[in-house]
Length: 227
Image (cartoon, rainbow, N blue to C red):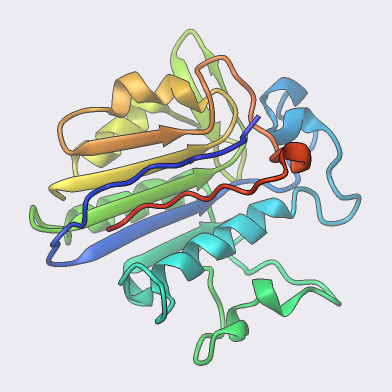
């Protein structure tokens, strides 16, 4: 269960701030075992699937780029990879989760979250980001583990292993990196990713599932990172 993620990172005087926001597969189907699915495969919306994938992806983008109370990122430096490459919309959707809720923005999503797109995005930023810069990575998906390691699923249901993500991060020179992992068994990524200058926040342990917050907690807690 995801009940809370609270962390504070000291203010970083980075030359540039970059982010990669990855939203996985809202409708995983039968190709992903239920035990590896978000919320244990239980209670997806009959039409929208796990629409919290989009809602949380949108809120991450908004948190980083909004003018008042934001984190000082520019939209150009926030790379949003979501499902098939399109914002999730439907008739009657709350304006809260639409790009045009913000004046001047038409869309949030930059590209799909297929495995090759994820690899290409990291590789492209590795050629741009310098040691003086800061990188924020947020991933919400389904996930599991096997003899090769822990993994999350891309939109095309390919496994992205902890060792692969460690290599992608290692190729980026940023002096500080914060990685937030919101998927089952995400704690298994920590040993591979944690090193000097890298902070990893996971939804749970290496053997734990990940699901919606318990609304009966009576209190909502937010991830609070100062960049």
